[in-house]
Length: 545
Image: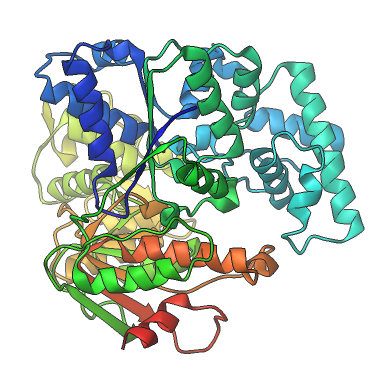
């Protein structure tokens, strides 16, 4: 099957190239929107491209209408789910895993639902054993020895652990068959069996380096059975950072080398400055198995610094920052430090201070100062300044939203007590109690400490945070003017795998992705305690100098 393979390093416009091709076919009248399949790594990414196409065409459509007109802009998992006409009741949930655990005597724990919007082959489970079962099916879908192959890359090599996992796999399979239940990976298995893809004329796949063996089978089936006239597949093998979740990088590389396909290299990065480009090039060249590629950086030098670890309040005083960490544990530590200094920040794209809490604090403070607030704000105050444990002190606000109320009104007519019990030993007059006392009484001491630190630092609570903290994996596809990259590594059951050449290649890819998020400045933070055995960034930094 002939394919157009779009190879593009970070910032070269792979997604824009695909979008332009979609618009070209639509504008030429070669197909209708329903005859185009556009599949990306996340639902959000596919929908953003769809919405850009609609905007460029000046179509006036509601969100629901757009979904009907462009039904096949999604993830491959979402496509499989809809084509199978599955019901939510057929998807394994907390209750199902709990029942299975009781029946078998082995612990099964619920996984991320639908990959949390991310189309990776294997969503992470809370159970290490369950993770291994998921990975085996994602990585080796047609191999009866799939578990044995996964065991080779782990420290779980004792006979007892292996037999237990094998039995858990059998029990899980039987449970799903008996109750007509499905897990995330099952969507593809059943979709392939049904062999009923949508009738598409043009097929587009973005972030293809992260597709699993199952997903490649789905692409093959769609292209073959639907009779797609042209297929465009875009990716960058140097950014393939989901091998741990079953991504089949080798398939993408083989496809790019296949002479039957047309290779379309994109060679100009519109994101990466010269200083970051030199580091990224060294990291890319360290990968043993890859598609050779060259590309030009932006015509700006940019800034690249390598620093020993230091307090995070230094250097973050201004500008938009993305702080990237290798592990979730390091993200947690960074967030704790930022909170100590009273810095506003986002975690994985979401502000850690809820807007509703800000509104509740404002409302309560206004009431304390003798002012009246709206019924809508009263609802927010009652909900967020209360908890199940002390709900009896507030009652339920049942006033009119369009009316205004002061503290005396709430005490007299709407269930608010004259004296509020904060603890078994302490009762405080409602007129004297502060918002932070109320939140502390709910067990939210850490949140209160952070909120008060933000206020002391002179920051307004409703200010849009200019600092975001994330793992490198979660930042995939993003970019920021200034990036701070923490290079800490952690070693778990796959430590032996990381010591292999393939493992070193994968780590180089992770740091390549992290470094190439920077549009202007890249600050690489290095811990000097000697805890970490593998540090590719600094090996290549020394070469550059």
